[in-house]
Image (tube, rainbow, N blue to C red; front, side, top):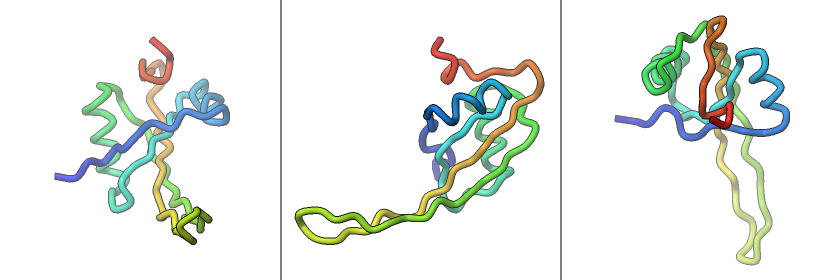
Length: 92
């Protein structure tokens, strides 16, 4: 059993999306849109309208041990139905 939702992404830019009913999550790279939709509906007990995903590129990072590589990761923009909210993002 893989864990579809890894973490919520709370940034200044994403808080503007929250006002429109769109919430952003870091998800597993191999998960599909339908898996993300069912996981959000099951975990937060809300109705999801649509899911958009994007794969974010990894990059190289210099450390004292040498050059390391940050892996690719995937984020999902989840739009909820009218009037639905996730309390995790609202600060309640």
